[in-house]
Length: 279
Ligand SMILES: [Zn+2]
Ligand SMILES: [Zn+2]
Image (cartoon, rainbow, N blue to C red; front, side, top):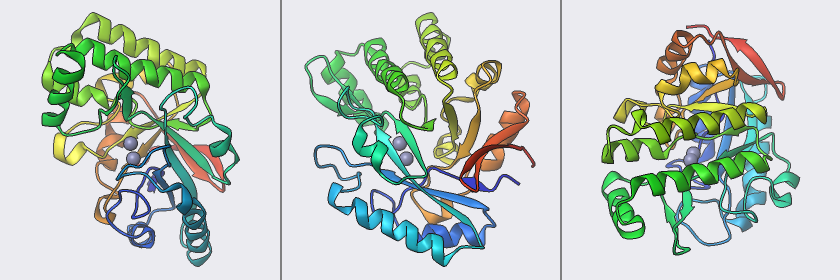
């Protein structure tokens, strides 16, 4: 039944409950595998990342839960690692040397032309303010900054799958609903997904916003193209609350079947494996 999830948060970062509560929910829902992936530390303080000095505790807690729930569910240690720049990204040796089962590469933060770092993964009102303040309303410029960073991240590698590959698109489409049809946007997205295919990286279908906003990341419009490129996909809820670990999963699997996918990737005994989609 493809009851798995490899993108999740907990109180070690910005998740709203202790790690074990998520694991209990996963066991109760009949999940066969569950990966914990707190936001990795950044070189500055934020209210949403795991603190660098807490990384050892984080890994130890996952290890404790792996042992406690052995035989009930396969648990995996991951991190959602931000691409910030050439020095701070998933490929850096610090993250490569951590004893993780897998790594997620995500872009939330981008540099403005003036060199400030802004968070594009934000509410629509704040997004509009950032667009006006740092890009003088030039949406194309702001969106291009996001995908340029995402492509640099894919070039550098060091991670298993791209987290919410086109996250900025939802806010951008609220500012300009025609964006999905604009030639420059279509071309850039095709270039981005082609690069992902070339580098043999997986893409998650992130269902976090499905219930509230009715969309996946990447957007369902791209699924057929991902399939054409033979990019392996996995379905993840990016849950920040234990009751949402399964949100949007059946809908995403249905949309994948419609786009021609027959299987999704799942970690089985530590190996990424193609598993048929079963609804
Ligand atoms: Zn994220
Ligand atoms: Zn996340």
